[in-house]
Image 1: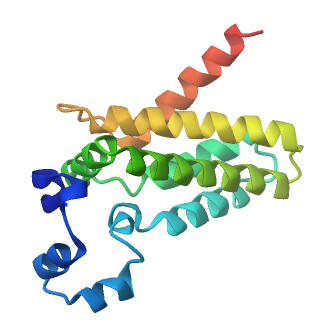
Image 2: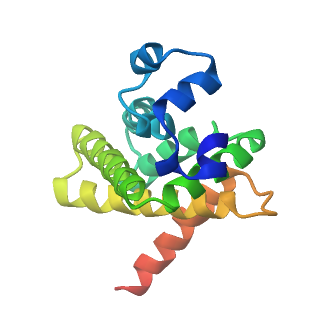
Length: 174
């Protein structure tokens, strides 16, 4: 991350990354398919966490309550000591159009996982899609707020707040 932040993502080679980490290039490729995956490692675990949280919501939970449970489960892993690292990571992504595209694809995959998990709970597909997209919007908003310099509000509180604000916004559309 330091190399990317200092010199820019495009300027850093895999050999330099491997050397900085004390690895060979071959060992690097045992852990990562390419250098983009350094920035996106762990995404499969997040998708699984969201699906499990939605599936594990109480039987009577509304789709939005199930989404809220998934956001809460995700937010629980955001300790304040990760904020600086994740802010650097996001800055690297924001400075590179290919990485921004990859980030959007990962977010779309997460939204699909949420919708599929809701459908598996018996939620009709259009409702599940809307709820999943609202969840994705809340997550993105909360994450951006969490990264703001000087912010000391927890990711859990920000996710809950973002979801609440979106519910209010939806009510104004009626």
